[in-house]
Amino acid sequence: MASLNRPVRLNRGLLAVLGVVLVAAGAFAYATHARWLTVLEPAAPLVPGTALPPTWVLYVAAAVAVVLGLLSLRWLLAQLARRPKTQTWRYETDPARGRTELPADAAVVPFTEEVRAGEGVHAVRATLAGARSAPTLALVVTVDQDGDPRRIRERLTGEHLPRLRQALDLDDLPVTIEFRFSTSRAARIH
Image (cartoon, rainbow, N blue to C red; front, side):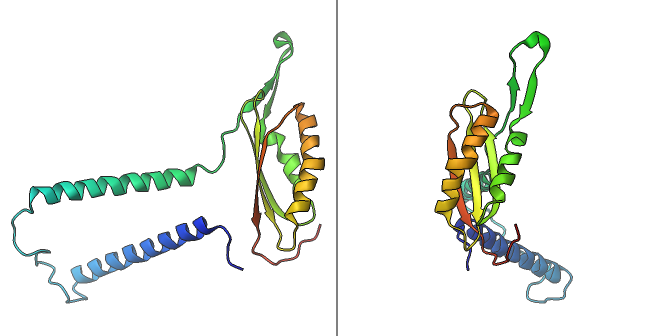
């Protein structure tokens, strides 16, 4: 079964094509320089004549280079922004007697293990972001091919999330759930 995450396939495909083109261009340039290929004379100019192109051509080339650079930078930044930023929660009732700190990432580890042990769940990634006064939980649940997302969602909302809210002493915890489907057919033992 093909991957259902098309942007990842497109990303990988474009990177593979770009990599092959760059390797081929580098190999061609080196082979020509080393005189293994005699298609071009190494000392010959790339373009005929020595006159500079019109000024507008230089401006267009610079504008295209800037746009391509900004698009590449945007693509690179999109690769880094994978998950929301987490914080360390502080529980202070009496600052004179001390305080308790809880990294938000550590708070969801037991929750993800509990969800991961459920039937039909292949993997779980959870991010608890925001301050303790306004938290949000982002879940990415990878479902086995024979898993039922509806049943997994019912278990999440009926069992797992109420326990997490109780453990964190929260009245409300907004949640976003993204379901992905595993392409592997390997059987798992619970």
